Length: 239
Image (cartoon, rainbow, N blue to C red):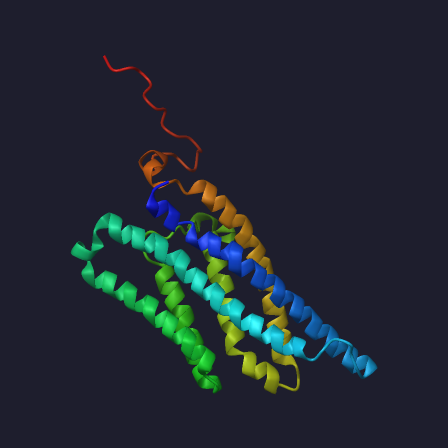
């Protein structure tokens, strides 16, 4: 493996080491929070400590920021590789500067989303953060697998990240809404997000097998992916 290939492992390594344990802890505290709420409503009290609600929110915040950050890391690798490979800094310097600014702006708006309290600003910063991810995902070099968008690691990941951003934006509404409408929306959307994370584990493993190493690219990209054939190497010894 060349050094560029090691950089390509940063994204899946972060997912395995940090993201999936966070998902497990967030689900655990979410379940305990719901059980405590149900027990308190039916029995008047619960043995589950009230701190589980606070812990659930804390882990949820960490999960959301990790998902968005991991998405940015996953996009940065192919975009950066494409910039270096095609020498875009010399041929399209404005495009490179634009991409860098979008990365910075996405991180800044995510931080501001955590700080925002008013509904308007939460909506603005959530929209800007999601827009930044989508713009970056449209750049050359990103392995999108558009012909199979329903089973694409990219599209599933972007959808999961957008759901996490939306969850951050409605946190204040959950606590202020006495009809529990926002809590129900939060629960349903995050159940969908859980299924998407499972899909990410499957599609991410598949893509690690399909994306070739740097030194293999010139040969692998000659293959016909539709008919699943590759050109036969010339094994005849030179005269």
